[in-house]
Amino acid sequence: MACCGAATAQEHQTYRCKVADVVTLAEDGRLRTDDNPKAVMRQFYDGAIIDTLTGAVTYRDGTQRVWKVIKKGSGDNDYVLVPDVVMPDADDFAVVAVTDFIRVRAWKEKPKVRFLVFGLSTMASGPCEVVR
Image (cartoon, rainbow, N blue to C red; front, side, top):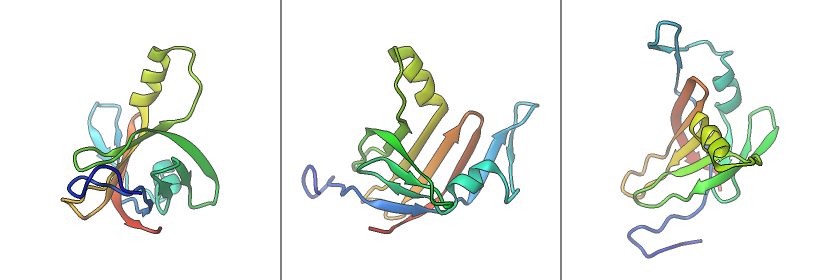
């Protein structure tokens, strides 16, 4: 479904993403690469399928979680997904949104789709491909 004209139109698509890198905040305050194939971020998100219309994320073990799409992608913006949880006030929601999020960059000007997942103090990133 196209949105806003040819130059910035983005179709909501579903992407399969591959984790290329994982970094974590170490005890000394530095970012450290995590090459462990059993790292939680790698286990969850390597091969994950992300639906940018519904926010559904299907992990490689087949479980699915629906995230809330709080920003729709365009020529200038990433898709931004946060956990779909009920929060009693906006401050609590803001805390969740800055500590756990998924970004999918699917810009027409940059045809290589990428994703970034942040959870607490660990971040994973990598390329994505359209699956539908």
